[in-house]
Image (cartoon, rainbow, N blue to C red):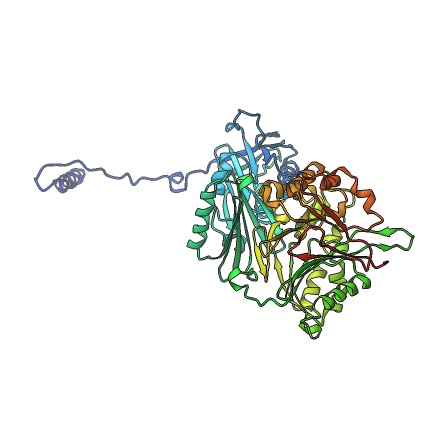
Length: 605
């Protein structure tokens, strides 16, 4: 039997040798796979392990952006990661930043958890793999990257990471070990942000909530060429160019698709691109659509706001400017307090200044009601007295309001000034209610946009979106700045309550383009919010011969001598100043304006 088995084996071996012959009949080598396996070999290779804490000792510390404001969400998120590790193991990681001394490089050998934007190349590697609406957790070398482009996606990423940490705690609670598999997560969260193509070139600096429904991406160290390439990328992704604009090396464009409006800007002074996306917004007026018939002349009217308090003192601030256009329509800037006297005075001027062509109230049209910022001496009349204007036509309300998330962030910040009142910021809701009642279209205006109203070309020079991502230090810093040019002959700079910080940005962005024939004094001549030097520089650059001062006559002498205001009288072109005065007073400047032609009307005689 044994011999028989050996014979069979020999025959099998011979057959296998014959099967290994090529067409030439020669024997060729073959590789026969070893089909013998063990239980261990049938399983996937053991994943790489990552020790965050080992036997009670911290291995991975937490890192955040050095430039992040203390009130920034990413700072609290970094602490959230740190506290989770501490709570799970009792070991406390350090919370470091990505700062290094000049000339030195970041250490790639240290074990770190990178939260949000950092200067580490591992963060950039993850960022470049995502859309703006995605977040990710990745292990790369010695780093663990937790990243999302905005506050919401960062929150999702950190929450997921902290849940993953819970799965890695050792039985004795002294170690925390994860696998590379656990640290490879990517998810999409935000459809609006995901609609934005990724900007190629430059360095992603920050996300900013530029309005309740407006997201802003800020890219630094970029060029105008890279910005233009991004505009092409928008078109390749289904967006159509609506309009473009350029101001002294700063470039702006508006793009739309069927769902979103993108407002893109290249800021030359900071070599940055700021890209904003929001739900499809009302179209901004094109010059080609500005067809009108002149029926009157243009003029600027500043109304007096000062009134006597119950304690015998005076309230001297407030802003109400009425602009008559050559086609007979009007622009209103703010309006003043929620006072019957203020609304009745504005209505009186609307009627008187349109008497030659408006047969009834319904023939009076406000082309745009501009709210510079939500303070009661500016927006109070609109939100409190809008019923007084129900009989006329208000076509649109223009404003740029701070988002509620940024209001809350500022309210929690130690850097905000002492008279910050977050509830005032929420007055924007009342303004929107008024706009709806008046059946007016609401525009969230953006830097670089241009509106054409009859003979008026109005450019948006500054909104709070240019100040971000810094935490807003005052609602006055949200005040819009507008350049108004009448028929190419007279330039009026409307500043609302812009602070030294806002005006500093304007000066850096536009330089001599700020030069105006007429300037409205910022913030009634009150404080600059800690930036006197910038305000002085701005006024010197504006160099206006005519000054409109929205202030009461009782307070004016006190404020005109302050250093950051007295410079208005020292610029080479200065010729005259008009102070708005008390309720019932008015200043009227005929357009085109020549120095000395202003008309002062004092109610007291």
